[in-house]
Length: 285
Image 1: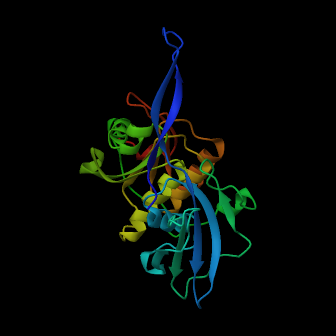
Image 2 (image 1 turned 60 degrees about the vertical axis):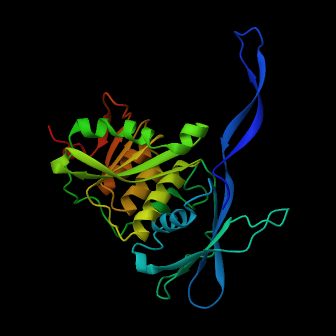
């Protein structure tokens, strides 16, 4: 498996120092491509997507991506996952190709989809914005979860405390899934994933839930370390997550989709307060 981080020599400039240029080592988060191949009936496989990601939890990433794309929505539809052959210039296995075996009755996506996904954008390459406004199999609209504002305000700090890779590199996003309990007054961290791509971190969480048989994710909050983009709201809605909270701003399309899909959308959640852009009725007064 590829390393999560690597050391590099850097030249550090400290302008208010007697010696402004210093030589040191820095720790970087690894970013490598992952090709996703799908196999259904028969022996042939379909090269479906290439995403730039931080290696680790790759089977979760693939499973979550397939949920977000509407290909699968229950664990039995994903029969197996395996790493395919792939070597670097030195002949070392790269672990950068995963093949997902789908149940025979699961329809393979159109071959023309073939998405290239960068680490900064989860829906680049789709034909139009309408193609991702799909109806999911797990709707969060009827989820009756209720939350204390103080509970949600405290989640970013709990997310940050659990970010081991960010502590080393300062260069990854995180997504944490919390189960709400005690009438909205407590939250248990179920799963945390980190990645150079914020959408990858969310897919890794959703994929973990699929493979654990936990979908739909009723009564949960998804706390993310970055902004609340359209694709993150889409991924939350497809997994049946009723609440998405972000430490930064949402986009206009994110708010529109949250309103349409029944997701409570929180932005600028930073410990002392936050903004609610959709689904305010889930908060306890």
